[in-house]
Length: 363
Ligand code: KG4
Ligand code: ZN
Image (cartoon, rainbow, N blue to C red; front, side, top):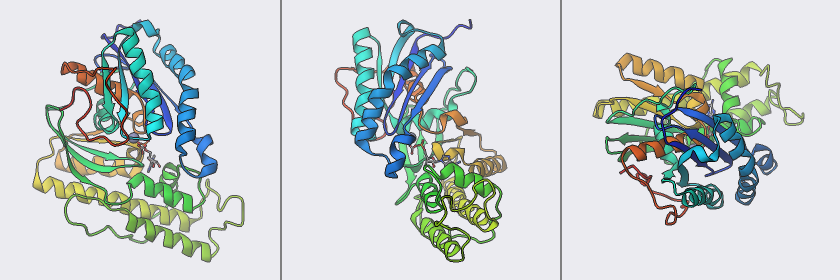
């Protein structure tokens, strides 16, 4: 068996509706990363129900932990450190994973790292697949986090301090993909499906990119435009909610595919426009892109082109670590250990709102 660099860190993430566990070694090799999703529980309610989420986290833990250790080929006695998400997120959900992490660390006398969920995303693009060692984050870089809850640009420095450069003033990019998907009658989360349908369409109309000053984002205008366009398709009979499936997802009508393509193009164009603005005000030593919506195919292609043209090194999060996962949480724990910092497992409280830079080992 290959040797791994001690200590092995157990990562725990339960900030929203995904229960996740991972084992990562000191050099950032991901030995196992599993996620138990709760989609079926929340789907009938059309969104995440916090009380149900915490109950599901509790129920999922024993099996998930065992499966994660199994996949890593280790036992709990091989674990040398514990990292758990402290916030932000749903309080009841956070409490489940954080309490487990605190208890394990305290009872086994292991170093403990309380991690800010977004810092997990920020450093996730440096993880590698297939048990490869992670890349050391450079002294300075710009992070773009695109998810169901965030559309943000951050400046990260060598000490781990994170400066917010821009963020959405209303909806997050993943959230509007989901809302457009929902309006099209697609199951939650609609984002990946809208992306897939857009691949076979042509953006024949141009949807607007908001004229905001600075580096902030805004997606609610685009959402309304897209929904108005869907309503027009409904009126002309292209989509019919009279049927169990409003349209055939495998063979979407051209008008729907074209609309998805136009919507996706405008959503991605806004990201590129903000990056363009940032690039004229400061150097971008490296761009690290993460979050669930970083799986978007057009976004990945366009960011690759944009960075190539400007010779900006680009790190796109590997797909298994784009959505919420615990490998990214364990990895922030590893970075904390390198900086010689950790937290007291008896003293850390979960927090639904948490300022950036509060993970152990960061600023
Ligand atoms: O990071 P994540 O798992 O959870 C949050 O912290 O929000 O991101 C989930 C979001 C959802 O809104 C989902 O629809 C979106 O990421 N997403 C996508 C794609 N895949 C996932 N959005 C657009 N295109 C995709 N391919
Ligand atoms: Zn997230």
